[in-house]
Structure formats: C-alpha cells, structure tokens
Image 1: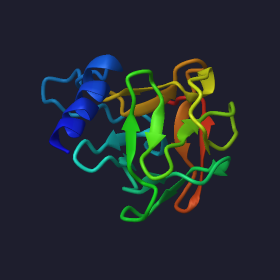
Image 2: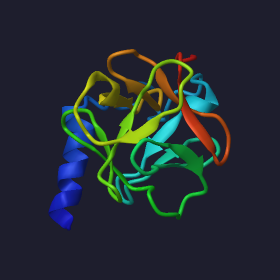
Image 3: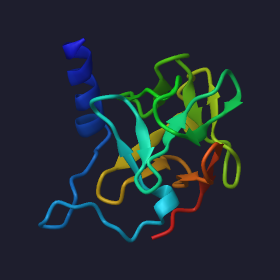
Length: 150
C-alpha cells in the first residue's frame, strides 16, 4: 500500500507538472473562482473543492460526476501519469464533454476529453486539450466544464 501512495505522489507532482505556489508564504492563489479551486488529497485520494469542502464523486459508466459531502463511496481518485483521473471504485475516468457540459465517468480510453492537469498554484483542474476548468455547480449537483476564471 505504501508503494502505491508513493507512485500516486510521483504521478501528481512530477509527471503532471503540479507546481508549487508562487508566493513566498507558500499559500495558493486566492483569485481563482471559488467553484474552480480544488485540492488533491494525497493521503486519502479525494479531490475537494477548496471552498465548500465537497468531494468529486464518480458515477457509473456514463454517469455524471458530482460534488458531494466527503466520506461517501466513489470519492477516491488517482491522477495517472498520462493525465487521466481514475476513480478507484469503478476504474472509470473523468471525461470532459466540452464547455457547459457535465463531467462524466467513462471507461478510460486516454482521449483528449480524459486528459487533465492539476496546478497547485491556482488550484485548478483543467482539461489539457480545451483548457476548461472543472467547476462545482453546488452541493450534490453535476460538476461541469467552464472557462477558467481568475
């Protein structure tokens, strides 16, 4: 188990280019839209909205990804070296269907809609192809892809 955690840490930090906060105090930028700020829980595998504290929650095949109170099933993710964000429960990957659309959970296929980059500096989770940000639309609601707002 410890080895798997180290691999996950390596994947998040080194391969995906997670950057450290630029400020000398080490704090993340606070000018990013609150609904687009996320923290990656390296100890528990959650991806939490930095403001509401709700966790990304994966659905079944083709199901909508939501932001829910943390502690439920389907909330552990691994950011893979190839940029996919895989749900530990079902093995499915976050999938962007474009601007304004809900993020879905689909079989991992390494397509452009399944490549994401997390940046610790502004706490955004962006689709690598479109540059759109994963956006919480409220508790127990679909998570969507929206233009990133600084």
